[in-house]
Length: 279
Length: 279
Image 1 (cartoon, rainbow over the protein chains, first blue to last red):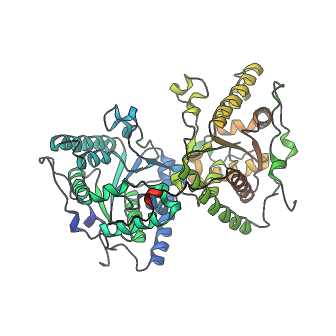
Image 2: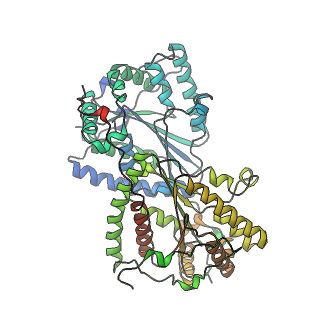
């Protein structure tokens, strides 16, 4: 474990517009690594609480300003911990300033539009912090693996995604994208734990195991999507996620740095309120 | 303080359909009362954490079933603590199962529809717990006080509200409505505290003080709205709110009783998953 890990070492290199496609080598980052761990699970939880209080303060400023917007995109294989990340990282952040948007399989009406239509409708507004739990990236993963779209269509979609995210960024949205990176072994353990606990059965269907059989195909689809859509205005970060506490701390550190970089201040005091005594 | 306070003592009597209008006497409940307090602020916070864990479990069952829906409506004068209640009561509830909907002044497009149009669009879906931070009740308060609607129109709106809530209830939504009840003195203190802290100025405008000048008119408008729209399927509760910790505990107790009454169980285990070993 490096003493001062650098978040940028886990950032997917930016896509070069001259290219049609670029794949990121996921095997270059160990899902079991814990570079941002503070030593133990307990100290990680303490660090998370510390960051949580800072995120809460920054989010209040964002909300008070009603000017900038923030979008966090969470992607990852089944059981990679998207839900758990949201719950842990935002535990101490005021829920009134957050909007969590889960994307499921598109409805008939949604599917009758272009694939970014329903996503655009959920973009954060001024002062809002939106979290996409799955996202438009599903549309370059599932159809890719299922061979419903060919290389050309896939590259076109990557381009549309880059351009869409560029629009959001240019109009005031700070975008951070996290790929929760787990090993195939970790997924096996977590799926097995769900199967062994009947109160967790509602979380999935036996057909979910089919996606696991296509693990390598999905990893390849992710590698291409991450490499082809990481940009300066909407970078992808790889979050080693076999350790849940590490995953939470690392996502929190990333958000902390991101929000700190936005120079969020409370709006100036209102002169009209100065010295008023309420009757 | 009664040893075993009864939530039903704080429920607004149900509206009798034979009547046109019914007013609830708000002065019959002391905003400074703390019937659900456990003795001290610290013990109230401990009780809140205890209930929070139970609410989290019940909310998970609600979410797992994807069948019933829950709607909490929060209303109250400025500084009555709507935001604070949401934050405190749901602190330990998984944010993924909640949807907090703030209603502000209607947009031009919203105002071009009937007053329940934008509200209906935000109704909770199966498995969801929605919290309305302000609501369709604003439409029988502000316009009433501003004399933009007459008695007849006001009574028509109460009826439309009762019928709308009856539709939601009949189709699977459990509705609870809370009026956060504070004294005029408490509001003065809280407004003054905001004025004295420049980082809170963004929360309001000097024109907000105009509503305070109409305090009695607003209390009368609330009295009529509460009395005319409390029903068996969508009851109003008066929450004494001068004490923040009391307010939080009482709302939490009310939600706990409500969710417990719904007999929420996890869906049955799936036979198809039984004995499966993940490979």
